[in-house]
Length: 461
Image 1: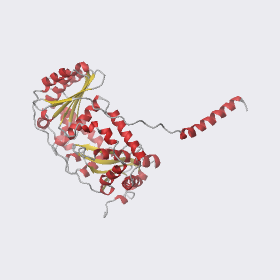
Image 2: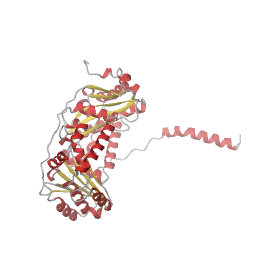
Image 3: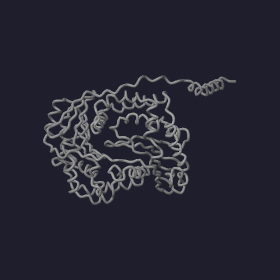
Image 4: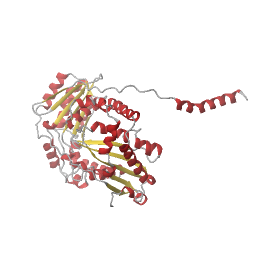
């Protein structure tokens, strides 16, 4: 045997042995979860009702300013679905003293961009700039929030954009499933609306948009967050000067739904679809409930993390889907638990069986300490990492304020997550994640999946 063949054989044997050696290695035990430390911050309220929170944070010479206003899609008229989004898009089109181009250029000259967006319960306006421009950014943000031009000339273009986006959304199976799922959970509430309507977009007038702004935007509904490196006294002075005269407006209204669980099987036919989109779940207590954190841990173990039970089952073991995921989706004092997955058509029924089976298994048997501790460590690390930026920190503070939670919520989050017991996880599943009360939405090829999903019909149907 020549030298080259001996070397090749040695290499081959060595490579063959590597997997066996790797399998014997045990990964090192992770350290204890690091606590999340909420930076010291100062909050105050201007005479007009505007709340302000200043958070000195980080070492980079940058500062982020975010204004959150309690005005969202829940506030738009039922016959004008799409109006709220049109209104916030128009707010990007300049102010009474600055054109849209001037707003963009001024933000860019300070090292940032200004964005406006809308959610179910709130509208956000945010800008991140170099620290030296913090006071100027406060003035620019205030101008956009308090003096929007809302130009009628831009409305036709924005309507066309909205109609094109609606056409796209209505063709996406995941969006279709969400629309049908939300309508089952919230049949007579704005939270049940996922898409605007063509009629709502077409009929919205500039007068109605201006009325929506006047009725819903004002200092009494607003909270300004400032996070980063800034001179506190100089920032306070700039905020008082630019926002102190903003009209208070009306106080925010609350519209919490009384969502009811109901076992429904809803099938949306998409002939020829290569896969089925599944979305199943039910209402659970909102973020202001003491069960919120135990539910988050339960969700992560069940389907809300890459190593979760449902994911391991239908992705890793069965190969039915590539990216299943569950979540606790929240709004103002409201939440629902849902599992979503795009599965191969021929395994539609089998996927539902395995998902519901994993839920039932967790109801009947508490997880062991090792599995639970892995999930808790994962959640703890993710929480700390996700909240290590100015924007993420502002989001967390805003979440606490919106939901009416105490400062201890964030300070004790990691500790409370790691205090959840196996018995609590089993109890949460029994109490809240009940297969017999779930809405099940399936979007796929009816001819190929109708028989598969018969076993999941409500009793008596």
